[in-house]
Length: 60
Image (cartoon, rainbow, N blue to C red; front, top):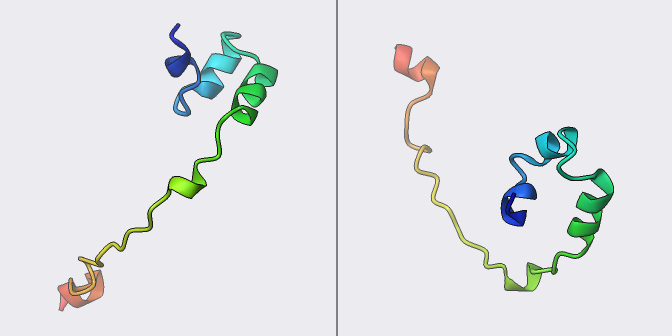
């Protein structure tokens, strides 16, 4: 199994249960990841739902 798929967050618990990977190896992998927080960019998301009626308002 390709390592990207082996360590995929969506399947990691299953891969550990199936003994495709040990918890120790997974923890070692996580510890070896680079800290990329300096690359983050904050974005503002518009609240597109703010003007929509609530369920209670819609019933009226």
